[in-house]
Length: 272
Image (cartoon, rainbow, N blue to C red; front, side, top):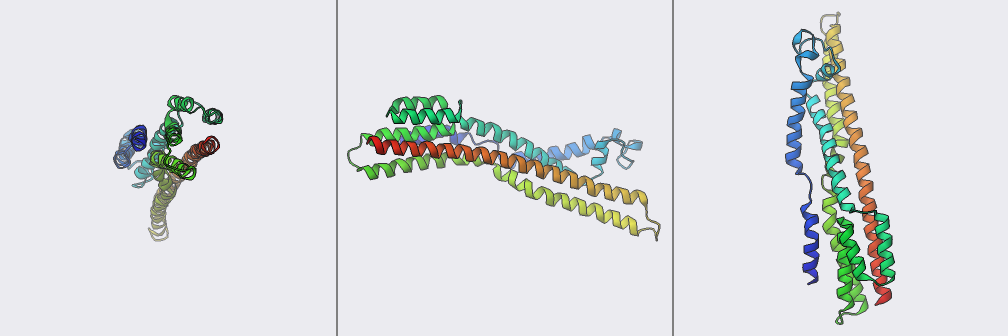
């Protein structure tokens, strides 16, 4: 009965898995290419109406960054899309009310041994913390009426229930976080590749022409290098900021779950 209740109450949390990372990344890569060719590469951004002309707008300058630019644009889009997705998923996991108020109310009800009222409060709070606490309280009730186990066995069983409930919720919270962490490090490396390509072109222009370097080709190469550097730094910085922000939110949620879990075990030890 206890295992059945645990599975049923955690099913919604396991369904709310967020975006499929592979499909989303492929779509964003395609969008990045379309932005590069159709928007940045629009003829109105260049003299003469072709991409071979001198750029007349900032978008045209970015287009001159070369073949690495679409990937860097896609990285920025990935950070934005997965950050928005994490914002809603983690917000949903926190539940409908204030976490601090919820924890304080649960602890107050546990001090009074009002388990049914605490379970009702979990139903109102919902979210990951509500699911975990509810499973702990259901186990609390079942173990309180169990005459086959001693107190230490009951406490061990209660601790295991809380641990399993938390384990079921964590994958939903942490999903796609590795993508943000990967972009934070890979973004600068991909940008460095574009920078190197641009500098190769610049030095080639500098050495070509027998002592009379092509100033236009030289400037194009340096511009390409700097555009890639700027986009890569921007994508990586945005990924680092969002990753740290959501990691902090997850750590806070986990701390609250552990805090309530400890209160449940202390209450059980005191009243039973």
